[in-house]
Length: 107
Image 1 (tube, rainbow, N blue to C red):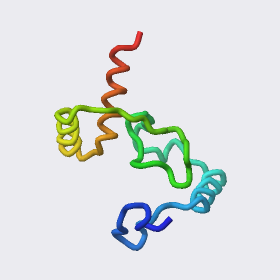
Image 2 (tube, helix red, strand yellow):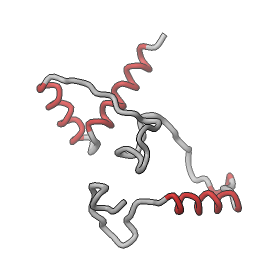
Image 3 (cartoon, one colour):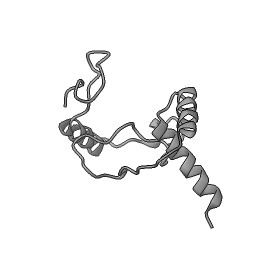
Image 4 (spheres, rainbow, N blue to C red):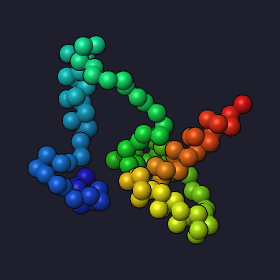
């Protein structure tokens, strides 16, 4: 998929989307020489609130299927302002908010 079709402009020669072949090469490299504990420089964090923007290329349904939510205009404006302050997308702010709410209110 070209950078233009992906909705982003390349900023440098190496700024392109990774292909399936790229991921296969990385997997082969990892299998041949896995990461050692001495190479890890900090904690590894995996969470639902830290996701790449957009849907993965070439996948119709994945681990992050869409969910429509209707919001009053005033709430949409507050969401947009918060996202801008956090330098995030509104979707990222919504994911964090839902995750935090469920963490606080789960039984």
